[in-house]
Structures are given as C-alpha cells and as structure tokens.
Length: 95
Length: 382
Ligand SMILES: Cc1cc2nc3c(=O)[nH]c(=O)nc-3n(C[C@H](O)[C@H](O)[C@H](O)COP(=O)(O)OP(=O)(O)OC[C@H]3O[C@@H](n4cnc5c(N)ncnc54)[C@H](O)[C@@H]3O)c2cc1C
Image 1 (cartoon, rainbow over the protein chains, first blue to last red):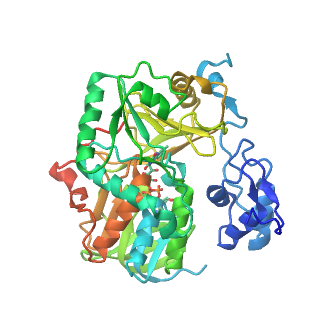
Image 2: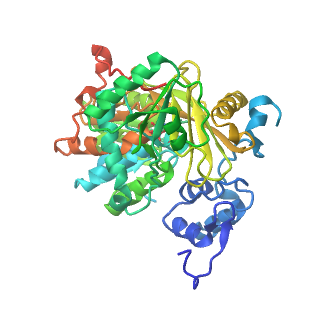
Image 3: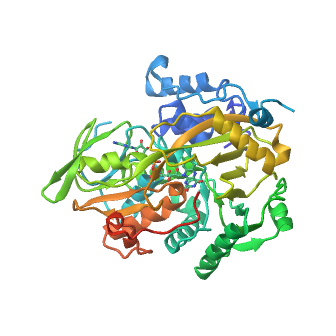
C-alpha cells in the first residue's frame, strides 16, 4: 500500500512510519485500544514513545467504534520517560 | 459482542500458546472453538518476551520441540497469511569456563544427533557473526544459524486472525472465573461475560495457570517469576545480529532488524511474583553487561524498560496434556521458552485432542511427573 503513489499516504507515527490507512485497517478488524495497535503495528514504539501519535490513533479508535475519546484505552506509558544513555545507566555518568 | 453459551472447546488465555492451539484445532476440523482472554492478545508474557527462538537445548525433548518449531516458523507467513517477522540471525552461546564449554559441547552433540546443525565457533568467527562483540574473557562459543527470533505480536495476531478465518471465536476482556466440573469431567467455564458449556477446556493462561487449574480443583506446582528486559533506540545494523546469550554470564542481547537492541537477564533466585514493574537496578546491571560485551553501544539510549512473568515449573519444562479431570487440559509452564515452543506445542496438543498421532510424543510432559519424580533434566537454561 505504501508504494502506491496514487493513494493518499498519511504517516501517523513518524518514528516507525505507520500510516493512517494501516491504523484503520486494524481498527476495522475489531481492535479498539492503543496498546493493541501498538503491538501489531509498532505505532508509538519508537524513540518518542507515542508522544506524537497517541492522540491521533485514539481519535481514530473513538470515531470508528463510536466511543468517546476519554473512554478509549490509552495503554501504558513505560519508563524511562526520556531515553537514557547506556553509559549513564551503567556508571551513573555519560563518560 | 454476544458470547456463545456453548462450544466444543474453550481455550483460556490468548498468548502464543492459546492462539496456536486454537488455530491448530480449527485447522484439524474442530468446528466450535472459543478462545478467551481477560485482557487481549499478548497481554501476558507473550507481549513482554524477548521472542528468541533456538534449537540449542540440552534435553532431547526441548531439542525435538524447538527444531520442529523452527520448521513451522520458517513457513508460518504462508501458513497464516500474515507476516510473523521471523529473522534468523542465529544464537551465539558464550561459555566463560572450561566446564561450561563442555556442557555446551555435550548439548551440541545431542543436537547434532537430532539433526540440529549447531557448531563450535572460534573467537574470530564469533566476531564475524557479531561484529561489535568484545568477549576476550570467553572460553568458547557455539552457534546455530537457524536460530533467531520472530515478532511475538505479529505471530500471535497472525495465529488469531487465521483462527478467526477458520471459524474460531475470540473473546477479549472476558475473564474465566470458574471451571465447571461434573463427576470426573469438565463441563465448561464461567466467565465475566456469562457461562460457556464446553466438552473440552484448555488452560493456556501462562503465569496464572496454577490459579486457573485450581478452579477445576487441579493442583499444579507452577509459579510466576518476574523477568526484566529493555530496548534501545534504533542504531545502524550490524552491531549484534545473532542472539548473544550466556547461561553463566546471565544475559541475552540482540539487535532487531529495525536497529533496536533488546536485552534481558534473569533475576537472582526464583521468587514467586505477579509483579511486572521495572527497576533501575536491572537497568544498571544490564547496561554494565552491555558495555562490557558491546563497548561501542555505550552512547546508545535506552527507550523502554519493562518486565513480564515466566510461568515456572520445578524442572523448567512445560506441562502439556490432560489432567485428572477428564477433558480438562493444560498447556502451561513454559518458563522462558514458550514463545518459541507455542507453534509446535499448539499443533501436537491439537493433534492429540482430535485423535491424530502427535508429531512428537509429549507424554513425558504430563504434570504427574513431579509426583513421580520423573523430571526433564535441562541444563541449557539460566
Ligand atoms: C522478559 C521475558 C523474556 C522472554 N524471552 C523469551 C524468549 O526469548 N523466547 C521464548 O520462547 N520465550 C521467552 N519468554 C517466555 C514467553 O514469553 C512465555 O513462555 C510465553 O509467552 C508463554 O505464552 P502463554 O501463551 O503460555 O502465556 P501468556 O502470553 O502469558 O498468555 C496467557 C494469557 O492468559 C490470560 N489469562 C490469565 N488468566 C486468565 C483468566 N482467568 N481468564 C482469561 N484469561 C486469562 C492472560 O491475560 C494472558 O494473555 C520470555 C518471557 C519474559 C517475561
């Protein structure tokens, strides 16, 4: 789908290059939480950890499944809240 | 979605094991299979695992199961109609003493006998396989090129989607809260969405399997154990394409095809736990190992820490088969290797349930082995 220039291609998750079409395809299969779409598509798994795409994906879920935004399951946000260098974790300093 | 109140088979748990079992039952012609999960797909151990696949085992049973699983993985995209993300960069096992190297070589002899083409490699060869490796303190290595990993999410979703196409019903957010037993046989399950009568019930609930077994009055000696893991931002490929693993060194490290490095280690002892929180202590210890083994990664950033549960048994091998309650089956206790075994154990259990001869005789994995003292001896685990 991504190679077809005729299609509109909207990248939702810039880190992992996930398009809105891919998101909609899996929402149509019945999945209705951010975690499920993250697992199958890797949306939100990159360096920004969903800061850029979580809201867009949740809005799609809300629209497709007719549930209010605040009832869409946003999933878990995992530590660290900002990426940390391995050397800092290992030695307490960046060297 | 309305739940059915009757099924031929109810499977409790939609991790890799339940998903594979559901798909294989439907493929063998069982009409009415229900798979349910109190959360959703991959909400348990499967979603938190390292997803490594290896045939370098020390017991004949694990070798047979694992190589059969690799055969399945190699054609699974075609079979299921969706990609599972298989990547065969091999497993490079590292020994840090002569004694440990001997154990690896003994295991290798067994593997070779069973058709697994593992081999000893030199330090130079190890560096070719794993370019960033600094393992001057290692005594020896073994390698098997068909080992590797697959994507646990893609694999489990692919099984469930294929199962659904064959008529399997998948109920999310449906918790099993009771198992109905009449006389000596199972009759169905009670769930948070209602009762489902069933001829056969299969417990695939991972680290909660002993809790679910108890609902049918069956005791199994399993327990949950917390294992931590972390992943880095993507970096240029070629750092550590194989799964780099050591039993005494207590680590597994691998760079995924899209560039992230994933790594984990086992906790001290075997404390029983349902806790899946992360600790900075793990991040620090794991990072020290990383810097020692792959010095060039020290500036790479860790983006995510998490933890999951191993469903442990006293001998670290799974429990598969019927219980004292007729038609109530287990497929549990996979410790740190259920992702790789799920594709094959789902198949052989489905074969056995439908009256076909299983590809691999798994009768020694009966849960009564613990009472009878017939444990499966496996040295190739941490
Ligand atoms: C950090 C870590 C690294 C690992 N690395 C590897 C590896 O490299 N290779 C490998 O092969 N394996 C690995 N494993 C092990 C592997 O994850 C497990 O063996 C495997 O996922 C087990 O699958 P399962 O389907 O049995 O269990 P799970 O995936 O846990 O599935 C069980 C499901 O049952 C559900 N459930 C529980 N109770 C109920 C109930 N009462 N009602 C309804 N549903 C219920 C849960 O929600 C869950 O989804 C690792 C595990 C961890 C934690």
